[in-house]
Length: 241
Image (cartoon, rainbow, N blue to C red; front, side, top):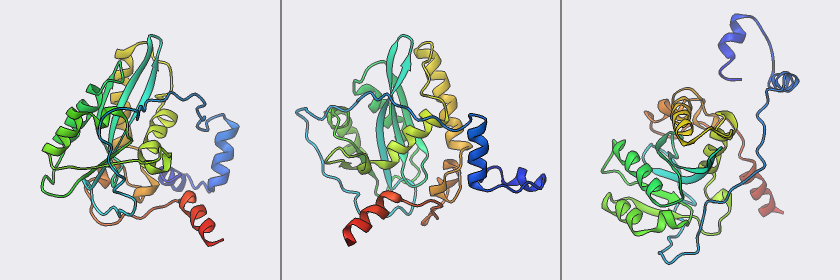
């Protein structure tokens, strides 16, 4: 709706959000929800697990908090796995890697890519993830510690402990068509690269005052949110009952 404003004004078209959704529904253009889920987290391992350090964190700049997750990608050869690191302030994907297995190498490669983007090496940065073995293993933790990055992890496995990472996965799958079954690993890798570029440079975010992630990544200070956090709203209402 935000992206269409210039076109609508130019052609003197007046349409509200509900009317737009009805039009999209009529032409079968609404985003379809996925049903299948492949679990990528194995938290039953010998490595140290870290507490959740971001519960009350207020985001005021890029490179303050990175959120991480792994999502499956389907191909006709079988599943492969996309490791993602997203800047929580700007919603920019700063690191990613597609691998054929759930081994830690994919997460390490994504982290190394993200580290190359850092512009504020002295500023405090927190890395937040689930408690999967990929994020707790020695190689991954050592890389974080060598770069003086504080480690934070989810504690009860609830999606709302890592909502930004979950949301980014949904956008890539539902809006940028990464939920499709690709022919093979190489086709998936090529399209993922294109999709992440579109995501970072073209798609505005209501949570970033309708800026694209690339634009928001150049800002500082609290960004206006153009949406209602219904989870927090309901949680607050329940607490008041």
